[in-house]
Length: 125
Image 1 (tube, rainbow, N blue to C red):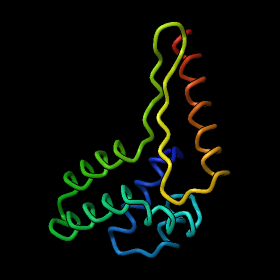
Image 2 (image 1 turned 30 degrees about the vertical axis):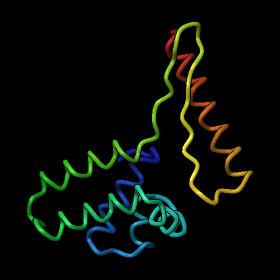
Image 3 (image 1 turned 90 degrees about the vertical axis):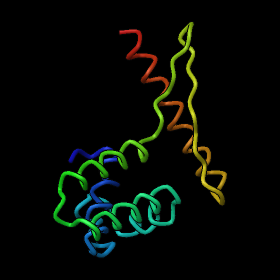
Image 4 (image 1 turned 120 degrees about the horizontal axis):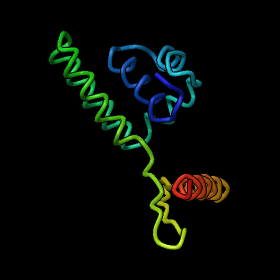
């Protein structure tokens, strides 16, 4: 898969659902084991992992169902796209997990604003 954050998470989901360790899933996804551990603490990722694991255990030979479930997980794990409105303004949604430090909240907000600016530029071209 490509290196977008959602694709990396899906890569990790597949490996974790198959019973691999955080380290093995991290290597497959191109991230650190600590990143995989942090993802597993996120409610959305944890729910997706549980759903993929359940499907993998119920129907391990049903590749099509597993791929479809992973595609659905990718959509849910992808950050929402900025919405460009009239006049070149845009709206972004920032998801800030509970317990996030002020510095991390600023980083998340800055990333969302940068993504919004990219969307405005793309809409203009």
